[in-house]
Image (cartoon, rainbow over all chains, first blue to last red; front, top):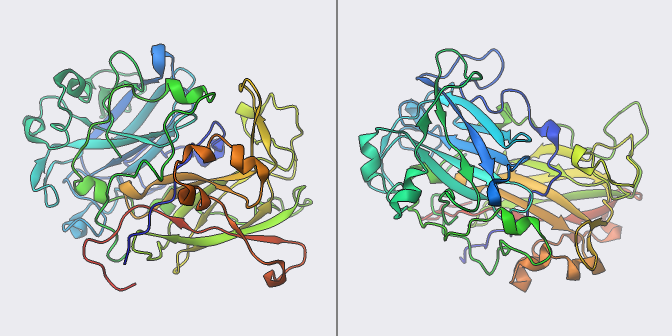
Length: 202
Length: 240
């Protein structure tokens, strides 16, 4: 049978309902209020998102998707799904603030032997960006500094321009907004212009 | 979820919208100038959140009457329903669909629309979150949104009535944000967003079908049927 073509994308527009965001949507370490915390090293990821000319892009919607601390996904396509952390979903969402600021609390993802790509995936976090003026989502993947596995990671290596690739690496940083015991990292996302973030064909 | 899709081809530019649209200024400053890098599909891409309802709780699917102790929203009552399917035509079950649209005067309940001269309807919120059932079916009741003008177009561009949908399929690669249009609206043919999709059949698939009046169980509600397909299929197909 022929494969059905996916329905065409359309922009989120400027009017995504603010009340669709709840406190805690950007905290991946806890599934719901009162639930046990996810296993692993807590990390805090923050930065700013910009459009052309370094204009802060406010009201952009960022979504994270990542493996648990052991490098597993609680999803039937992961052969190790049964061992995945039951207190971790791996997904979070947040809108950028007026100055383009965003932040997430999560756990350090584990790397893993990838059965699909038949390669070792370095610890990484997928980020989707949607918002006004984006007819389709933009996707990128961020990596951690000083990870030997980065050099062999098939997605990291897919960014063939070394300078662009370096923009996918989180930078250790400090932040007053980081929770206690969370290691903080900074990443700026530049949708267009100098120091543009590399995005992937979706 | 059993045997979710594991195979995802890059989107076909013919059936997806252009990233930049003339006279739609926002599309020119938020799109990368550099070519997109082609990445391999790995385990991260073929998986996705399976317990999203913990964070994105489905709510009331009656957007037309959000406050039980108050009158319903102003406007023509419509029921929108359809099936969410994957590339193999199999139902996508327990999927979260977020919906939002403007009111019957063309105004959104959103701080970004505060300058809109049209009135707010105090009995309308204009958004809701539903989940698909075991057949991949969703359904909600609302009022028909109005058309409204985009403020910056040099010769005026009116958006046809449309409903925004943010859909979470079975994985990262199945995520879809789209807009549903109404059949027969003359503004559809000149809408810069709908017409940004090159393939005519792909545009048609963004337009709902009207349910014949005689088939609607209630006199006062018009029905629209809108099926949506999210990307992804099985390498080795299973039975439905």
